[in-house]
Each structure stands twice: as C-alpha cells, then as structure tokens.
Image (cartoon, rainbow, N blue to C red; front, side, top):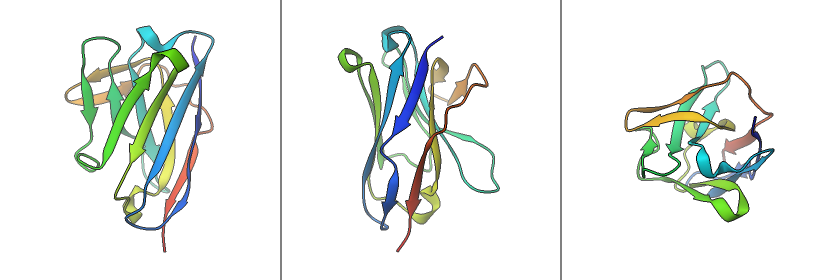
Length: 124
C-alpha cells in the first residue's frame, strides 16, 4: 500500500498563497488517482481536489475552484496543491490520499488511512 506524507502548510494572510506537497513511498503514484482533503475544526473531512492517473480527470470543490490547482510529477512521485487567493475559511488540516476514486463530481478516499496532514492557517 502506498504511503503518503503531506508538507507545505503554514500561516498565511488572506489573499496569500501556499503550495502543498504529497510525497509517496512504497509504490509509484503513476497508477493511482490522488486526492486532497481538508478538515476544519468541528467539521467533517471534505474532498478538495483530485487528479486521476491517466484519463485526465481533475476535480475541484466549488469552494476552491479557480483558486487551487492540483498537479502531479510522476518522476518525483509527488502530487502538489497550489493554493492561491487563500481565505480564512480555507483554514484546515490538509490531507492527501492514494488511491482515491476521482470523478468530475468528487474525490472519495478508498481506505480510511490518513496521515498527519499539514496545517494551513489563513489569518491576519
């Protein structure tokens, strides 16, 4: 089973940017759809974005569409989430997961196996 580690979170002011990384070990990411999820305090985990392994499917939640960009570098076995124009409501712990079911309608984790995530805080 592929293991993933998230990094790149931090404290940023509203309107700022962060780039999250999801580095994999144990298996190559080439064959997996990868998803980013987030969980804010007191809220359920939600799917933010996902990218398929080969058929070009990319999904963004409506709340991040136009501001976040997911990409993958198979050579580095890493998936990224570029987050621009950040808002206070983007504050959450961000997790990546592999494999996921990635469709035009959502990102769904297959295994309930989550890492530590990376904290993103958007605040003045």
